Length: 400
Image 1 (cartoon, rainbow, N blue to C red):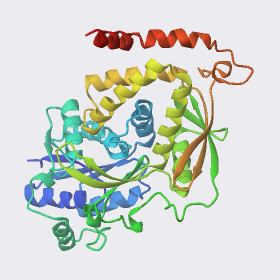
Image 2: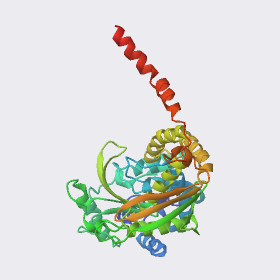
Image 3: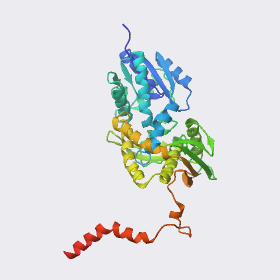
Image 4: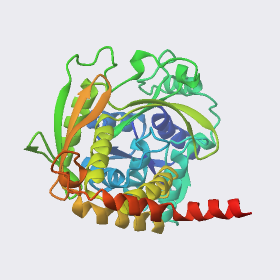
């Protein structure tokens, strides 16, 4: 009788490495590991070798960077999806993509189970579980960290050492890092005390304000129908462009945040985030919107952005409402062509210029010099009509 197969979302880190051994020891499962290359800058061959040495029967390595940026990150820019003003959803956006890959491989391998390394109090368990349920409701989902006997990261480390699983984490360096091309999420260790300043060694992608470049740098970022296409006039693929913005933003300390956030499961947690490229792209796209969108469209977009962000954060990527909102935001991108000039300096990203062929900014209406074409006399009538309801109410009160 053949062994039961489990397809595991494998990162090469502590949790998923221990999970391979746990499935084999506890259930005698055949473990098929799936590593999604989202731009973690890790050696995929070493990841594969580690999974096989730990006990996986097969390892799939998939380069999904382009798909991740095109189909997940770019729609998030269009929607201005930023959770609680600081988190650019780097992990949240990756989970539905990884889930889709897991489902495809599970079906190809005739696997009975899909597994992931999320804990019982994190957000990722919801993002994985709900995405997998939406795509393959017939497949069983197992998250060992929600049910096994290991009670702490220290015990995980001891388990790994006992079973000769290579470690990149120690008791002295206990940070949990989730990193992809869209940003880094860092937690655990001293970070669990919200009163303590984050140590310098926590940050992976960005310079501090003290060590960032002394001189400011000017960057011209161009969009074509909502898609970022050029930096300083040089045309780049989206992957190349994001990599370059990560470099530039990182050198100038752009995109850091230290926040206490509200998790979906009802607890508050302290997280360190870094997202140089995501921060710059969101900021620049917002500046372009202000040039080309009419007031009603811009303000209503802002209302729907909050809902979209919550849906992504809460794991509802594969839902009808999220799909409908994508179509709403995509419609506006037909107008989003133009260039935003930015000044990067010591952790600050400032807009210093903007232009667009679709701009609604009219110099002759905005200026106060002799070119002013606005009829100021119209202002008096406008104020009378605009304030008429309040005037009527005041008159009514005085009569009473």
